[in-house]
Image (cartoon, rainbow, N blue to C red; front, side):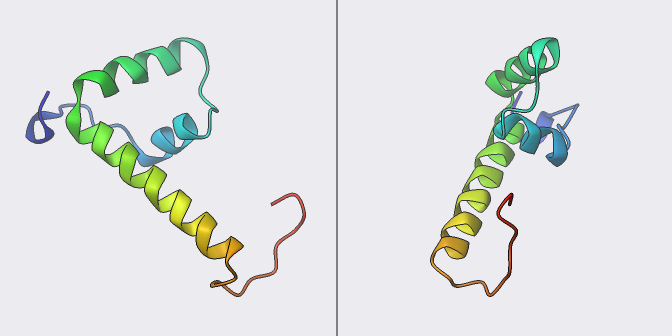
Length: 72
């Protein structure tokens, strides 16, 4: 599939669950197969991962004033 021809775009929540390692079994396998063949969804996953890394960096560097619990 090309970026313009993804017929079953993966929801952002599912991509985030995958990135966080929260998908299991057949669901994870099916998504991986889709990602290997779909540039559009793979690009969205990369963008979400970069966004998460950027947010984490900003938080650790103190650029975002916030109070977080220890669990967070």
